[in-house]
Image (cartoon, rainbow, N blue to C red; front, side, top):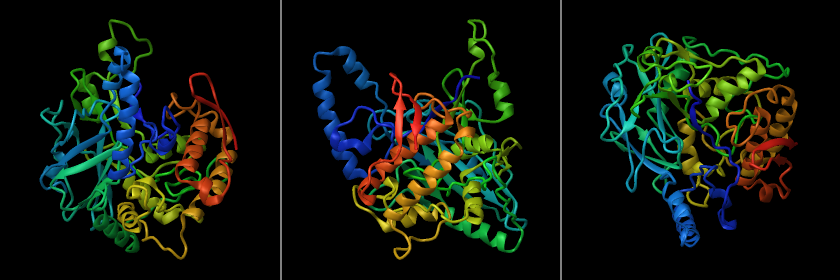
Length: 444
């Protein structure tokens, strides 16, 4: 199997205008429609000047993926039939393709049986509008009275929902969140919390990591970045003809997914690619937990029967088990801002989707979030160095190990949250890069 097509919010700068530092392609920030419009116009001017008389550069510019896509929610998305119906990816302008790693969108459902408190997961498929799935998904068997929540992840900048969105939240009236959206999350978490109170749903303990500290959650300042609790753990299979299928063992076998020790001309067609969402959840479940000897919260996948992770499972556990200081989505999170303005309304809408309490102005402030990021985030990253230096980097193009990946992510988050101005201090993280721009060391 080839390396997964994954795009991470590595938050390291690439070419940018001084006034657009928070809008680098690598950062994938969703600063709202007005700010993006200004940024796009400015970049377009620079690009236009840069490519004049340079056909190769012009071709490269034309090949840059459209960062904004639309996804069509099928009818009755919370039903078994709706879960099995593929979501359709398209673009208002230009093109959006699910197999383009910079445009891939992902959908993840978590299901609660309120009678028993049992949880399960199902990953609806996303395909290009006008296309067909490589293998048609089968409708899952839902328990009677099932409460279904659906979450979205995106590798571009802004994902806009269309279709049957009556139970969905994509942002506020002024702008979309960006990479994140959800459907029926509020009722799902309400039902899950009732199941916990009734002792039908038991949330597993975090356990203790190799560092002697509690294992992390998505609300640990040692893990969070500038826009925490976003994106999902869904993966899809890309077939040889470019179409997409759900990631199940049966589908892997049908499509010829095999792990190859040596790539040759004879076996190259057996190699297939998995499409993956570079998410905070994947960072926790797939990289941090193994590095620290921890175990993620899982539930059975209704499509495959395997035990799998999900955004909802991570947030349920975080809500129940994270000790203070608790990282809650702040108002200076780029996904909760309207343009360049803080928005409590949009922040609260975001929080509903991840089972967080409403913003409390008396106890919360962007400055406090930044201070905890510096104090707790740096201390935990430093403490775990001996474990994370041996861990693989989620994005080798950005950093050469799990440690350097976390360090550059923390450094970029400090800048993009405006912590320098809020705390009146310089960025305390010093990164060392090689000639290719890959972070190879960090001073904390």
